Figure 1 (cartoon, rainbow over the protein chains, first blue to last red):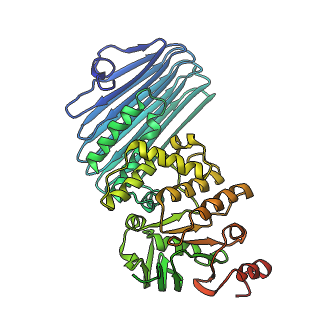
Figure 2 (cartoon, each protein chain N blue to C red):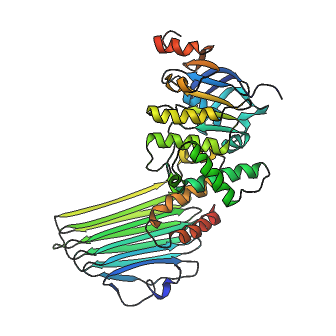
Figure 3 (cartoon, rainbow over the protein chains, first blue to last red):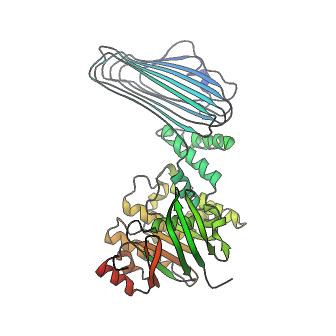
Length: 225
Length: 248
């Protein structure tokens, strides 16, 4: 079950060393705090970390990851649902120290009310880390004029044979999608819930607890609509 | 109640301050299938958007009565509950939402509006399988995300499936034939024909006669520059086929 992460990933003093495979979902709820996390991904390892920030939670997340062994892959997904006056700040620093690794950062969420969300994501590719693939994405849905989202990507690339990209979007709910649903008789408020679930769904792809998480997120979304 | 299902009177409507429909008059009786044909830009899709209440469109004059009610006073979802269905020219993809979830939400919302309990899960699944079989959609589509990765034909078939499931009184098919090969067209036409009944009506919007070879309309209208410039029987289809829209 997701939710008991505090003992595992985000609440530890020493670095989390991934030798083979790690898939973990961490859920932050009101009152939870998260300590800075450092991940070291060793050769051929697979790391997949998803952090979910539930409504009503102020969070200050710092995640540093070192791709320290060749052919390691790392995915860090952040997902937030804010509807009031939450403050969510995320700092990531993904460092490719050796050749042939891949990293994906996906930061996705919904900001309503007067929420303030900030994502500062840094990718460092060391001089020797050729054949690196490093991607970063920030997708945001704004539900109100007062909500603010800030995205700041930073790339420090010292190798020449790399594939690297970053992208950020901030938008409101798609009107055509909404009309399609309403034309089928789905009330406007319900259509919005489905749209938000739809927006968040890519982050859940491939996760073991996908259905449980989707149900919990649906509740979270309903609480802020 | 009158014997007129849909009564459009002197309808003027447009988008972003631009008038596209310039005085439409149209009466549809229960059981009738009307074809609305016209060249690109005539206002065909605007007509379907206005009938279903697409928010971006504004009605500046005229009235629409549906089963004796003022249609223009209803929201898109209320129109759906009243029995109006639009088969979209470009069905929208909704990632992360399965067809099952989508249609269950839609059907139960309609039932709630009618004061009915939600359908039991097993009953809903049975109904859904039945309607999917009806348009020859494979059962595995139930779990697929709405329209995501569907071919053009699959999207249109999905529209007709939704139509069959929601069982509307007035179906509007907006360019449902565009982009379909003959086999897909036949499946769509079979679906539409099977849903014909003395109390159900349909508007088929198209600029080809293709679909009308299979779904035979009772009345044919030609829409041009925002006005209905000609109304008659099936003979009009042939006239258009031979001489195009310039003659009107």
